[in-house]
Each structure stands twice: as C-alpha cells, then as structure tokens.
Image 1 (cartoon, rainbow, N blue to C red):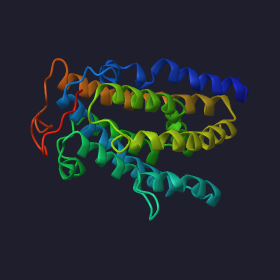
Image 2 (cartoon, helix red, strand yellow):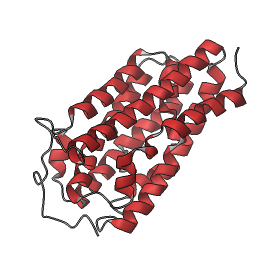
Image 3 (cartoon, rainbow, N blue to C red):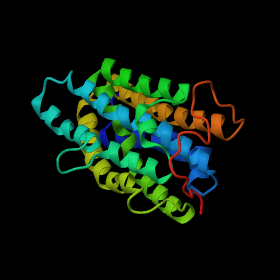
Length: 251
C-alpha cells in the first residue's frame, strides 16, 4: 500500500535517525577532541576523495536527465563544489582545511593514499547514481536531510578542541549550513512527488539506506586503519608523511 507523503517522509527521516554516520565512534572521537593530529589528517585526506567525487556524481546524474527544469535545479550542486568566478567552491575550501592541518595540499588533491575501502565506497556511490533510476539517485542524496546538524556539531567540536580550527579552515562546513538545506528541500519534494507507488517508495528508502552505508563505511575504514586495530593497508597514507611546515592540530 502506498504511504501518504507525510508517512513516507517520516520513514525516510527514520532511516537517518537510525543509520546516519553521526553515530559512528570515529565521529564522536573527532568532535570531542579525541583524535591525534595524524588521525585528523587521515580524515581530511580520505574525506577529500568523497568531496571531489560529488560533482562527478552530479554530472553523471545530469547527463541522464531529459527535463531541463530538473537539470537547472541540480546544476547549482556542481557549482557549489567546483566553484564559480564568484564562489570559491567546496573542493578548494576542503583543501584550505588540508593546509590548516599541515598537509601538502597537492598530495591531498592527487587522491593518492586513499584507503581502499574509502575508494570502493565512494566509487560505488558514483556508479549507483549513474546506473540506478533517477528516483533512486535523488533519494540517495537525501542524507543531506541530516547534514546541517552534523556540520553544526562539527564546527562547535573542532573549534573547542583543535588549534587549527578557525573561520578559514572550517569555511567548508559553514557554507554547507546554508547550501545543504536548499538542496535537500528540492530533493525531498522531488522524491515525495515521484515516489507515487509502494514499490517506488521502497526503492527510494533502499537508496537512502545505501547512501548511509556509504558514509558509514568510510568512517569504518578510517577507524580500522588509524585508530584500532591501526592496521594501515598498503598504499594508504602513512602518518608523518606529506606534511608542510608542522602545525599544531590539537589544542
């Protein structure tokens, strides 16, 4: 039986309440100030792979869209990350964070040293958006429903616990506080309008669940490689390497 829009939205929000990566142990370690400088750096390096892949994911999505109105609405997501003449863009803001924690930004931008599980999870998300239905692709983006809260908590936690944190280094997260609600308002309304059968609602819910798994898997990889059991895979970034002038990360 097809659920009402209100009931279906509640179902989607419940997925985030149960599965969003704000509940992951690495998230709590980072935001509480419990990460070492190299654990922070490992997070910055690996998360960059996700950030840099987002506009590629969105471009793959737009290449399949026939509706000019949908393409027009979606286009700003690419500009938000890649930047414009007036907007620095999320990718460059993330590299500013890399500078702040003492990493060689060219190394970070090269995407070398990424954990295998990070690469597999992010690449799987790009393929998902490229290959699945448009409804499933848009539904997978709805983790943005829960992003503003995690960005706000991240800003507060990093400012309180790490010497590198300031308005410049955290500009990516501050900008997403206004960008994410705009994106998700459109995406949620589109999914609620187009998931008009029980089967489509199930598919959309499964897509959102998949995306939460993608985010969770990235933190699992970081925790396993750099926290415990601290087993870094061959080829992944080694602590103490690819640094610029050492900077204090922890307060």
